[in-house]
Image 1: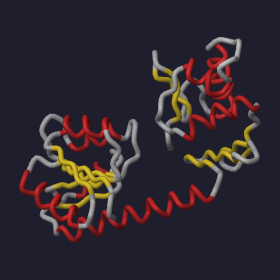
Image 2 (image 1 turned 90 degrees about the vertical axis):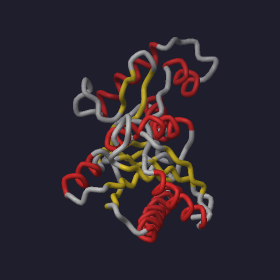
Image 3 (image 1 turned 120 degrees about the vertical axis):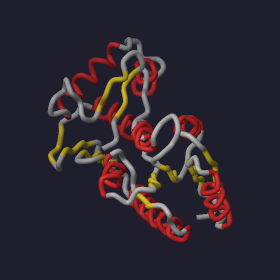
Image 4 (image 1 turned 45 degrees about the horizontal axis):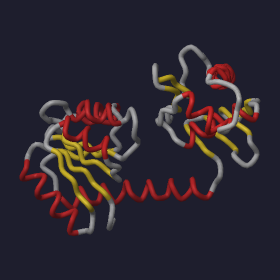
Length: 231
């Protein structure tokens, strides 16, 4: 776990101090936040390997913080809750948490849960690196064969449609402006305008979306551009 970046979010400073000391003893880099807004600001500025997130926080609750983080990041999140009720655990998982720990907890349990998540993430990353395929939910891109599949059914895409989808899938939740997409996919010297991007996005949605007007995969951030929502 040495060198992993951890964000601990809790308004109880003694708990934060204890967790931080223990994780730093294992060689991890630990940042701390004491309210929901501070946590969101820090996650927006820096990439973390895992977040320990208390439920009861000032400004934003842990659930709200978790939900907002999930709009742009898949960083593993462990919820910390003083309540042992099943509903609180279920809520945390529904908002996108990967695990939960009920207070009071033993720091050894916290570290065991962190290690378990790191192992899962490392295995997943190793599999992803070993394969050129890009997979998100029931969609798979065969990058070598330049083919796209949904539920193992091939979707007939043109070369440019595939390139647009590939770029967006390789960078999930990242918003690309129309001009940026035009340069990256068609090249700096392409004589066309950004309407080319809009046309290709529309055609792409018609092929991969069950309901193009309510897309599951390729979304629009109005006034900014397009992004692929990781499944």
